[in-house]
Amino acid sequence: MPPEPNACTDIGFVGARMSMRYCARCDNTRWVCENNLDRPFLGGRACGCGGAGAPCPACNNVDATDPDDVPAMPNGFKPDMS
Image 1 (cartoon, rainbow, N blue to C red):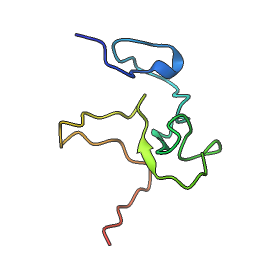
Image 2: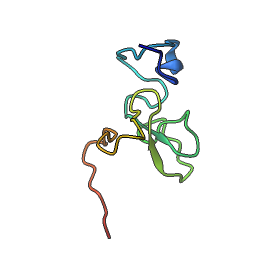
Image 3: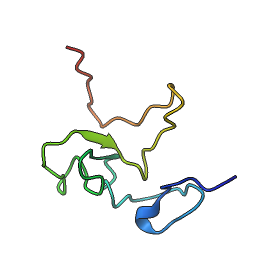
């Protein structure tokens, strides 16, 4: 199996996807700032620039070609369809 790009590169693992205990990019929230992909979107180190959240590319990445592959959502997330 070929290595996946961006798989856990934040903490030094390159190649096949590794099981992580802690993601330094998103502080384990699984979401980063859309404008600053190296900063968490939630929590104590949250970016706060006003940008939208995006799935963490290191630990919450999805297959963009598969419409059934969706990122893990934050606890308590409720979609706003208005």
